[in-house]
Length: 597
Image (cartoon, rainbow, N blue to C red; front, top):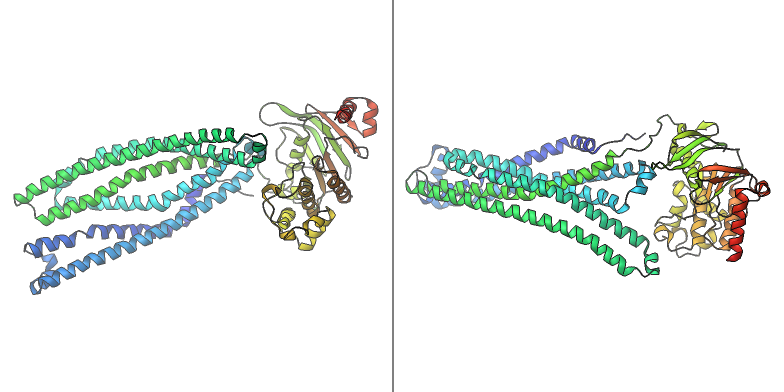
């Protein structure tokens, strides 16, 4: 059984597994910072002790001997030190970028894997309410935003934080008064960053929602493009798409304005701090209280400190976007499945096919009872039809059998055992399903037929295709069974798609058959093929057919007539017609409609 997880648990587990890589990345950050802090000192040595001839301190006695021998040689050596420091800085930056990028990409992989698994566990009612484009944006876009934080912002933030901390320590060592002058500008900077963080986070969340709406609209229109063109609604859909896109544009412009305002505020404060330091430092040099090299080093450190502080404004917006994305991803993980798998569920290799509904009631959460105290029994090997008007509850009975939903009241038994006690996947493998809508994937024909039995041999796939009368048209295709069909089987006719779906069900060799009027939307030739294939498949198996057409129900063992979520009649076709009840009225109405058409 899969244990449900939260976003926080995934992050904690991921970083625990990557703790050594994180430690190595932290060491690289420290090495980079030390290299950054060391870079101005060769300039101070050249200016103060070689060009201006100041007295050498004891700590630099080894360079003093070299300078006494040859000032040019000393300048060359110290200049080469700049290259060495730059080389170390580049090496540490490369290693840190590589390590954190790998951690970030693996985090996205783990997040998307867990998200996909969790989405498959959620109920169909959740997916009916959710917008596909919004879910796609969360799985792809929001996880990418988190990756960007860990691959870019985390690197920059840690490096900037260490640089600022180290710079302050060195500046206080050089001149506490100048360092205190710099610290006076920090409250303004931090207020600006905090203000922008809060505003951008709210804007980023709205922008993500707008992106989800754009993706949803795009998905809906492209998946129904034939309908759009048939009704000449291209202009209307273009206007609607422009409206949704313009809302996303507004949020993007608002975010760009906030980022720009924050960056300019930081630049102004930084310039003010730099001007104050240069003015005060120059006065100190003129009074003989500081060396020019000290002012040069101090301003170099100040520039290296203000640069990461300016970048923190950008990083704060990235963190804001990431937090908004994390909240959206967390919403999915916070949605729990409506029912959980029994860890001790019964795994079955075959079923006899006895089915019993006992006082089953169900609604989709809106309080409108779809099934109301439904009870019936089906013996093994029987052929049963479920009939009734649209919305009577026929498809809901099929969904409950497949454990797409759980009933609010009553119990459902298969072979005398409540279906909640079966292993869900094992149970579904024993039910062959052929729906009115032919659902295929944009893959090869072989993969579509073998979808329910991926390890099937080619001979088994061909045998199922022959039994479904699909082999004949498959071999005429350019690549035969390796032909890649369009999304949802769009490159095939309705009859061809349905025969592939039937072959897929046959390959499973199920114990039960569940058919939702598989021949209602196809031509007469394909209908004859499918009826023949179904008769061969159903031998010795229980079969439940959701029927919208009453012709052909004469040979069924039992017909269950549903009305407003209740079984109002049951019996054979002849007995129900003789009774002159609701079923008889439905049949008469269908016959009269057929005559008028």
